[in-house]
Length: 396
Image 1: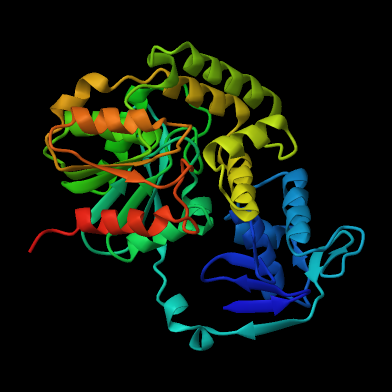
Image 2 (image 1 turned 45 degrees about the horizontal axis):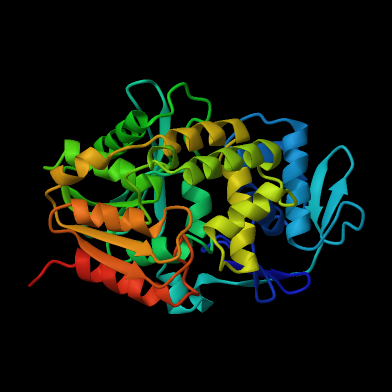
């Protein structure tokens, strides 16, 4: 169902998207659910208990948490607590959506939208007691994406950064993703954050779905995890894809400049994590998405706030900077595709070339991009998808 209201607002429940005019508005999953509940219940008071039941599954949350989600929903649709033109507070009772709303049902939705794949999220527990969120979508040959720094299986599914790739893959394969420990819907407060723990998380996620053999996709630090897993379990990995990956973290590259970059990033993270006005946010976006659109950068900022805390992010980053899987590269004996952006400053181009040169028979593809994350509005996007499809499609 799509709902139209306010000044050009469109709430699309199937795609879990909110738009204002032509702009896609980034909203957290809970904020989207709060807004959808209010719009569906328009004209009626939605109580605190209604929200706890429908949005939080009956779990108790604080009044401040509830209030922050209402405020975020108001901001997303151009409303405020002062004007209350669309979402009105009903004293001591709850909230009521008072704007005019029109609907468009599934029968009127274009076929391309109606055919969108839905994902299913389940949970499993690692050997050291960490609960992990696992998402699965689509049918066909299994493609597993290794967990990496900053993921949220729900948020990413609707993000303009990740959604185009995730939905493209899920229309062709059974796409399996998971939030590594400390991230997203998985346990945030964990004792062990290390490469070995990341590899165990991959093992736990795939075992929970009884996956015996699959193609494995590793991006950024997830590439290091995928390399370590493939070296340990060659019988389970049919094909290996590495994108923007590195075998050596910043502290292991033997370059003083790389260590200084790592230290500077840590300092900025401590001061400005999740604050879109901070110097860290500006630096973070310019490093990971130097050619990103304002909308994409906005979602990248939102991903920080949604995914993890500053403390856990710093621990995660420290573990990534100390990674060294270079000795494992010659052990990889499965067909391997290595894709790397020419201007990547997070994982330098030389790291991708180093990986491809060390893995026997690996195919190396240089992408015409400055972004660490390949996005659909850049020239490298068609080549990126073409190479993925060619590599993953069995020869006939």
